[in-house]
Length: 435
Image (cartoon, rainbow, N blue to C red; front, side):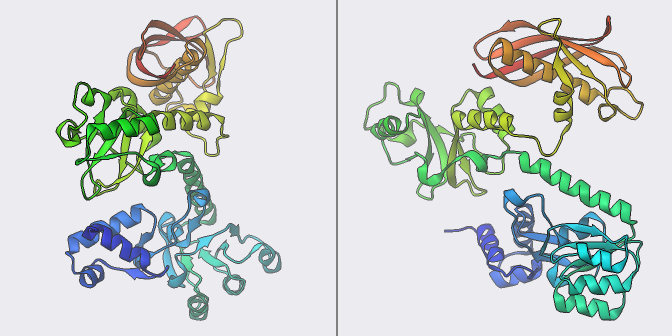
């Protein structure tokens, strides 16, 4: 039976896109407390099926697929630019395909203004009207208002007309930044993207026996399985270690490990990879908020996804991407890496930021380990025991030296040079993900 939290989420999903949602109404309709309703609505907002807008309220929106994650709804635009909705609230859930800056003559402006687009313009009432008639929403900059007849038209067309106090350039930059951030998020892989779904997963129940472990092991080749109760909640894990020396008729709940490590579908790939390496486990159950089994994720799934990431072109550039793109191997000396300090890598004083300094060190170690040991690494500890300010446009040479390496770990000393002068030194402890 679904929990109250799950029932509220299912109820919200059943509502028509554009419907207004309130804590009080949900609590009344489903006979739950205000606190339970509030928590469920917040979860729905995290899942991207509702959006809360100041002076408007919470509305049901279309949940965007990951492939279209760079698209924004008009409701999200309102939040981004601290806007005020003048009309067309019923269309806030709609997704804009592009935005157009109205800095031209009306006839030229209309050639670029299409249905589902957003026209960014000042106090030009005729442009507001023509855009709405063309099926486009309107964003008025400079804090200006518009005619009541245009607001009425926006209501009829169910197309938002929004006002913001920011100027046109600032608004365009803010929307661009939001789309850019979404592109970076789009690249982040979560457990739900790569895990084996419940229908294809192998698990055991508390009432099954050791002989059932052998059956699952023969079919799946896994040595570790989640154990569920009669409500499909994960209550334990059973591995090859647990069954050694046990009779075939021994019940699973008598030998399983309780309170196992689990992840949810929204757990990042990086997090689950770190967990598997650190704990030395090959398979982790994937559960929902009620601890119900939704699937499993294996070490092979993680490694395959990490290899796929390396082959994919980067769409949104992060600090790590900037560091990686600016670092190359020195052709004159093996194991020496070269990087230029560009403006994006500096702090407010114009010197290399501490965060980028750390990224340079880890990137060099990662490249070195891939070449020397054919291994991926997960950084466990970085000790920077010497650093000096490095000005912009400096050429740095990063030299990682492998001090010790085992089957599962590596110890690396890293020296950073500017010319012949040492400007940084660090010691890194890392786990090996694969060999």
